[in-house]
Image (cartoon, rainbow, N blue to C red; front, top):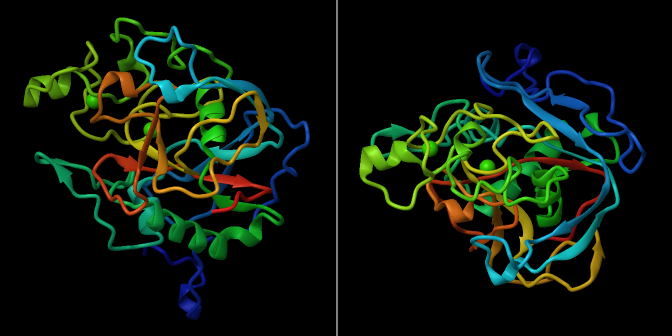
Length: 302
Ligand SMILES: [Ca+2]
Ligand SMILES: [Ca+2]
């Protein structure tokens, strides 16, 4: 039964079914690639909630003025991510979100379901996501002393997406926009054939709407679907980047819109770039916006 563990027969609901060793203290030099699985109770066939350890480091955030398709708000600056953190290997799936809200429905698009267990959850506002994290910290936080589950900051998201690359996408510049289909579920010829979409990637990824997570090649950190499939909510309010450099930037103190990153199966190729910035009212609940989990030793102000 979804959402109930082995203690259910005793009348106790256990969402996290096992205690496991705490991850290493963030900020030490553990290197990347270590994965942990959050012991969430899920349907047996559903993908587990796995996180990948991302090592701290520095990178250039934003895009060079020469980048094809860039927007002016992608001003480059130097960012240091000072502490290691864990981030979801995949976008959060419908099954994982339904451990929190059993009746959540990600609906459909033109007759194609968006609601299968391993498809990324959509129709979740930033506030829905915040409520999910409050629940997850209550249910599973004790297994990870000193750490909290939360959304990535925008800088953590781009650092994780780039995985050391400086190109438009983590698979390269892809200037002709015909290479994406091995790496991401994007707006592609599948949608052009079905619905006469214009402005598509010139390749066929096989999915007209969301794909089950993890169907394409990962980036160098072992993260899947950072670009494409669904946009991913970040914690930050939208605003201009600072100039110069910053350590663990968290975005403006106030704002109207929260960040979305990575483009989606529905949006134009130019939006599927590591540096592209999109934003929405935090109340937006939409067919192509989902999210990814971070587990970290610090929490930005919300
Ligand atoms: Ca597609
Ligand atoms: Ca994505």
